[in-house]
Length: 376
Ligand code: NAD
Image (cartoon, rainbow, N blue to C red):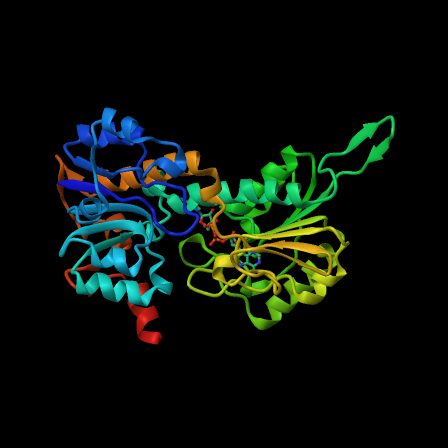
């Protein structure tokens, strides 16, 4: 099977779906790899490295028109048009919020796999790009906060006086939140964190953070797949009270709270932003899903009442080398899962293949996507 790797064309996107290191392994497994010229440039992988690893260098049409296409981001409408009729696409489709794309893939009879739908089961861990990319976002969020904050992160004792450490509040302690806690601690900050899933308390503490505990009763805890549930109004109000009490003393707030298929919950209201010290920083990693802060503007950083609020959407892309390397391992592992001796071998009884497949033979085969499109 010929596998195409087009250059990512979304504005600001620097990652590439497959790095040269992975090409050799894919070729050895019997696949032919066609990489668009300059596809790796944004992440500093040049064409020569791909050629040396055994890839064929091709133009955009050939890469997009391959039997199987590997991408980081979802295809644009034009890119979807360029896909081969009845081919395979593996990318981050975000199927619950992209109905037009899903219809376009059905029209092309594309077998569309979404990397963000890979079930969070142990067997699928090497394929889990949500984790690999969230991990990077959590790390970079703290660096962004440290860079914007007009204060030190660590405590310093100097001849000119003592500097107290920055106070960092992390809301949502999943993959991104835990990495944010670890990174902020490494920089010397004092870290507090909250999550509606009480099971993460131990993980927060093992990283040196203080877990803020409140009893959300039935509303807290884990839902399907280990993800958070949407809170009841009463539980949401309780949480906002807790957040308000801690936000006002924080120098940096990193928010990462998400509930699958829903708008991100508002945890930091405009009033809470106003209660913060001038010069403080909020980095809202939930910006793409509407943001955890009421004043976040997705896609950019803004200053409100002396507080910098970061809503950038491309943090993993700013660490393009490692983000590409890790995504490449994720997508290669998934490709290995659905191929044998260089040919496609789909087993829809398998939980990983079934859970990740969104469209097949002109139909939506992914239950949650079908439900989201019907309810829309
Ligand atoms: P996510 O990105 O969906 O959400 C981020 C965090 O926000 C989660 O921890 C969630 O509990 C929290 N959250 C949601 N609503 C909130 C609110 N109102 N207030 C505060 N926090 C809120 O989550 P994720 O990082 O993708 O991780 C989801 C789950 O998957 C976790 O249990 C994680 O441990 C698990 N996981 C499992 C595997 C695996 O077994 N292969 C891999 C990665 C993650």
